[in-house]
Image (cartoon, rainbow, N blue to C red; front, side, top):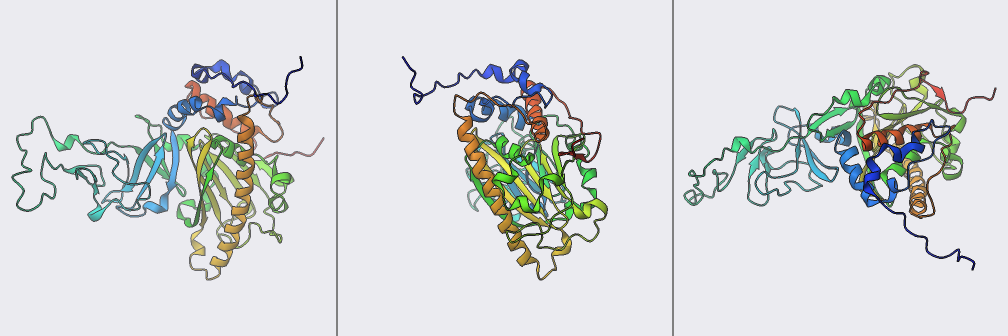
Amino acid sequence: MTADPHAALPARPVDPARFTDESTYRATRLPVELASTLLPDAYAAPEFFAVERERVFATGWVAVGIAADVDRPGACVVAEVAGRSIIVTRDRNGSLRGFHNVCRHRATRLLGPDAREVGKRGRIRCPYHNWTYDTDGTCLGTPLFEGSDVPAGQEAIFDTSVAKGFDRADYGLLPVAVDTWGPFLFANLAADPEPLATHLGDLPRRFAAYRLDEWVPRRRRTYDVAANYKLVGENFMEYYHLPWVHPELNQVSKVADHHRWQGPGRYMGMCTTPVSRNTEAGGWDGLRPLSSLGGQDADSGRFAWLFPSTALVVLPNHAFVLLNQPVAANRTIETAVLLTHPECLGDPEAEQGLDQLEKFWDLVNRQDLHIVEEVQRGIENPAYRGGRMCFRFEEPVHRFQNMVIDRMVGIDRVPGGDEDPMTPMFPEPA
């Protein structure tokens, strides 16, 4: 009897214990010229996603926002890391602070996801029982324990001075480690986090001439992506797909001009040089370049994926950032931010250039997101068991997948980089 080729394929069996077992990843651990991709469950199984949130996102540094959004005391960003809501703000002295978005009384979420200021008079108030916190996390007032804006004439009702075993000094907000580099806010949920500098490796040195901490966000868009965040990242890291997915980008970002650009650190880096001029379809031009750049920096595009989930593109005249928040195994919320260097702030022609750049980046990004959603649909087919790497194009993808594996199996390792700071991705044939 001939099997029906259209019959439903059986689902792949899912054993969560496999996901923390080194032997599961044997084929991906091989050198890139021999390696196969991560197992499909890494992109499609809710069970993998649950383990990954705890082992990848809850144990290390994650970019959660733009540093310019917390440029003064009381300004805040509310972000989600590994399913936990956190608040990043600056205290009254201007120091950066991070807290779990949880009241110490009955665990109410203190601020909504769209909050940009902590609250009136720079205080964080619980909407449930009005417990109140300062921006350094100190508990200022606890109604029904100690007076906190108790209505006049009702003090006696709220007098609970007989409460035993309670000291509000013990009930400050739960802290989260936070730091900044360049345009980014970072958070780390670990109890004893490593320095952010260890995570970034030599990336700050590579970008030193750009003075990225001075760049300003000018345009933002949000995309709801029906795909795993790793597919978004892996697409960003390779140029194998450029001629077929990005006909417009391919005209201004020539495949032959690409180099790997990565040293030690938890990132994947690439470079295009020289920067190509615009075509009728658009391109990188539109704003004047930063005047202080010299040498190769003045004529290159730098592309870095910051592990685990953030893209950074820096050109001489602008930067483009993708902050990717994993929501489910097959869903990612992506925030795109277009930034300019400080010399553009007083340029009367900058708005027109920003319009052109925003349109071009939106086109490129939508092309990418369409194709990664198609990959997601394919990877959920039980017939697919994984594929071979293309060594010439996919070394950064291999590097990234092995970083994920390290975290999944409990290895704390900062990968090394190429000996050559600019390794051609497409060397001339011998």
